[in-house]
Length: 175
Image (cartoon, rainbow, N blue to C red):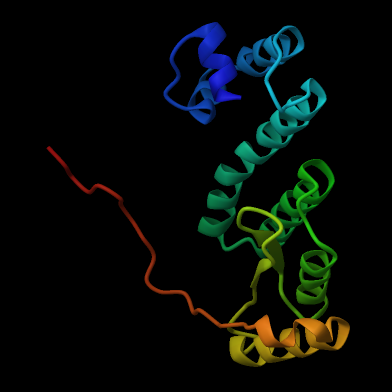
């Protein structure tokens, strides 16, 4: 999509930045998709990818705000929407990753989604460590997964990562 934009509209810092600054970029890029061919990428697939990108982009800032407020419900909704779009639009989820997301939520996670390049099988889950021991959650989650998908036992693992101190500034007072 970036290459297509740059060939017809000029250099681009990033598609995210450009779409954030100018609401017409998505409409203009869709028009370019409709009039230009890209080897190996049918127009309908490029439109689907752009739809996914346009939906996912605002979720990043919304997730940052939800984290800053400690809003587990909002994070759960954002993660569910993100995972749902990856499954429905990108079609890069497997039955196993979809099952892991659902199992995580049933087992007490307030948010869960697959991640990575797709077709890889990685899923994260967030639990409230005031109410749930992350190690016990991970054990239950893995046990449920292995019951549903016993053929994957040799290559399945979990780990619990506890939150550290928050990052407050990426650059500080740089002069």
